[in-house]
Image (cartoon, rainbow, N blue to C red; front, top):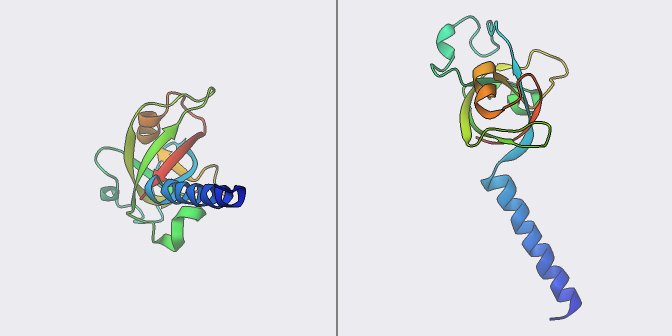
Length: 133
């Protein structure tokens, strides 16, 4: 195989890996936690019924918010470990109930304390995540 042909093949393989990473595995971003009170939210105001019974919910940054269309969307989240921020194994599913209250938002997704504790071994920090709707 000639050198130009190898480069074309390598480019195609890398392109397919990128598509797999984005479409199949989801997006990469960051997550942190936020403390109560969680009300009012930008999705359903003071309605307490908007929160999932298991306590796994999140506020979205502007990048995820989509002009409010993110309300009620569910995302699978997996924490990505680092030396400073070890993660728990597995994934969780969170529901978007709010827009991040800080400007600028400290992370892509701001998780309820219960959700954050389900994925991270280090409280009150920012972790890298893989997330997909």
